[in-house]
Image (cartoon, rainbow, N blue to C red; front, top):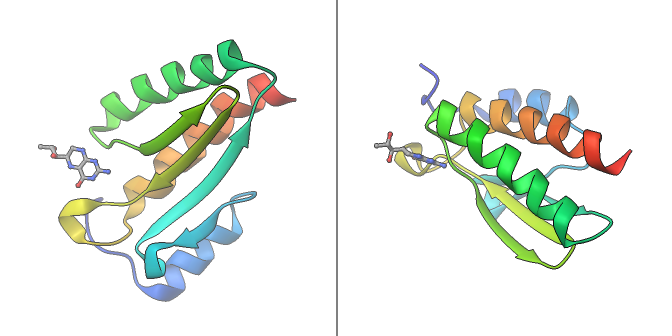
Length: 101
Ligand SMILES: C[C@H](O)[C@H](O)[C@H]1CNC2=NC(N)=NC(=O)C2=N1
């Protein structure tokens, strides 16, 4: 269920609930670029997100340089987007809000 591929409309509905996320890879992923104060803040975010990802058994693709973290979420097994991507995106938003705001 959680790993069922979402229809296009469901993807737009979920995206509308998120701040600053975009579709990537021809609609097969959602992406966001986070900017923190410094590397320690960025890595703290990644640590918290990694633990959330492990709990969900759903893992991010990401790229970090110093205070920047570029994230792309997709479900490889579905070759697209599922509830799990939006669940993880929501958890990342919470982890980031504690560090950016
Ligand atoms: C065996 C394990 O459940 C799978 O490999 C999980 C692990 N994490 C995953 N993460 C993501 N992003 N997509 C997947 O399809 C996926 N599959």
